[in-house]
Length: 610
Image: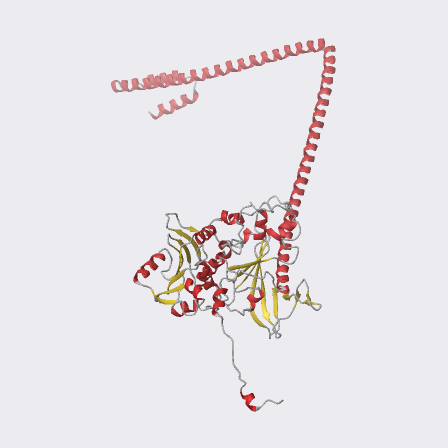
């Protein structure tokens, strides 16, 4: 039977599809968010708000989360409570799905009886309005209605004063304060995060530890109490902080580019000295283990980059370059840096926490990847010294930043879900093998360095041993020379003794003759000495006589001069008294000079002149 036209006109077309709000509210408890992860979500939001200080403040009636970030205006505050709204899709932030902040506030509002309570959020931007949002979670849970149940309004004067007091110890006087009703479970959770001993006792996963999740963030996370205790800052774990000299051969950084090709397939390309390298297909479904040099096509779209960091911190127990020996222990030992955040109470917990590959998204630890490669998978095979070095002591991190969108290809590659701390723990094979290639290459560099240092030390020791042997040989030769010299001296002494004995015998035979000769010689010498003495005495006597004669002659001349002077004076006096008697004078002069012809001639001339 054929249907009539009237029957056909009754057919209709409708559009359907809607949110089951009751199911949505009930699903808030089924997203896999633990209280610890909820706290991490809220801290991540504070970091996204560029906070310099994040404070957990425990009071008698409330527990507050305070930050000095940029705060929120009306639109931002309303967007915060929109389900699945990504508030920062144009900024590279920690948030992804737009669900974590609301989920975290809801979970943390629950008391010990699992009953949710009202949470109030106070916020203010720089020079902006003092706003607040009231989330009555019990009412929402009871009514199974979320839409329209969040209240947005201005702070009262009293709330503005209290808001300022909460931020008084912060760098900025704007930001956000989230106020929860006090409950013991939340207090205990927060206090545990500020105690390394408690964290290790509980064997808390790195994905739950705030000091590791936010170890790369710039903000300071502080615990304050109103019981009179001093504020405490949480440690910030960042294995790759510090100088290059704190790592064997330094820190190594490789860059992997993420592209989408013209077939909408993901391509991961390592930039190396050899050129762009990629793990290419091998067979129908497989991939090669080593990268090949490729050409990046101009039609490929760049998605972002991953930074792969590799490093091994210097520790003398691993390798001491002053006293180099091969690393030979399979025991779990903590280097000086790790010992600030872990204890060696449980070696398996420490190995599980620190091995593998840490993945940081926008400075937040997202997960730790366990490599499929058995060489680097800490869960496979029993460890020896080599495997401990490869799997535990040598560390690898992957860091990337991206926009907060649900369809982000980088987040999809990392397997990140709505709850950022839930990860599939599986990377694309091409990406994982590039990371392993980078890790293995750096390990080769370190092992080569170890070998070179040990070889240099061995060569140095060899030279030292050679020098010692040469010195020992020289000392032995010197000892032999000294021995030979001593023997020669002994021989000479013996010969001398023999000669003395022979001379003694010879002397005894000619003793009498020698004595006579000696006596004669002595007598001759004595006679010669006596003659010399006599000659000397004669010379002295002769010299004395000559000196005496000279003295007498001088004395005579002096007397003669004196006599002449006296005579002249007398003659002068006589002349004054009597006329000159020439004849008498002549006779006198002749008498005086009778034996001196020269004087006589002079007298005659004188007389003639008269």
